[in-house]
Amino acid sequence: MYNKLFTKILDSSVWMEETATRIVWITFIAAMDEDGFVQLAGIENVAHRARVTVQEAEAALLALESPDTKAPGQPNDGRRVERVPGGWMVVNSEKYRLLVSRAIEKEQTRIRVAKYRANKKSNAACNAPVTPSESATEAEAEADRPPVPPAGGKACVSVVVGTAPPIPPEPVVPPIKPPPDLSPPESFPPGFPASAEEAAKHAGFLLGCTEDFARSTWNKAAGRGGRDAKDVPIRNFRHHLAAEWGYHQERARQNLRNMGEQGVSPSVQMIRDQEELKRAEKRMETIRASVDSHRDLEPKDRAELKALKDRAEILKKQIGFQV
Image (cartoon, helix red, strand yellow):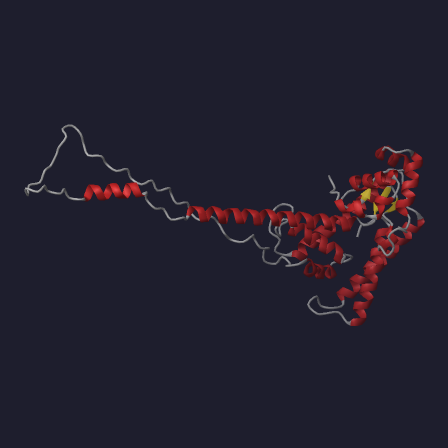
């Protein structure tokens, strides 16, 4: 597991913090999993992994958990991490994942275009006209020219015994290679959305799934040319999204179970949040079941469904899910 570090961090407000704060922040980016969870049980663990003192780790975490006053107007008031049972959550981890996906997709496109241009240049060189040398042409003309008789009217032919007339060399023609494949970079399979915004529309048909998660899933698959992790073409994106969302939820539940095995008891507030989340998901399922999947929702139902989804996202963040 590795995470990319973009050079734009040098221009961010976190780079104006104390040295220990910067080191702890980079440590969190390196240690977080694909859901943004950093499994460090306590401040002493953070100090050990970041190679700073416990006092420096406490001050750094306080700065990272507090609103960013140097750059106001950011999501979550600029808070970068949030304390959860068993560790910390990097608040904007999904944003970093999208940046990485776009960077990978851009690099793959650059490689495909470079390969296409190299093949086009090679094909042009192979199809160049081949012209025999002037010396070979003159030799062939000289051999075909009849002898000129002398002034007396008799032809004079000189023969050298034991010596054959020279044979002009055959012009060397290089073999013509078949033209390379000049087709443009492969397109997505049939049934795969053409854009992330089109993929986000499928989130409304899955219980609890958010549009941001649908966009992230599309970006990962698009970076592989519209294929899944097993290199199989995705021809039904909604089925693929449902499988990824189920895996994502199971992973979050497993994180909670691991916390329980480590002796970390969920708080009373977390239990209340879980109960409220179940009620919200049940209500969303009831609304979707009341209409046909091929017909739009009523404005009243659509407004209620949006409010429930927004509340569910907040509850999932509070109980350890990464939306």
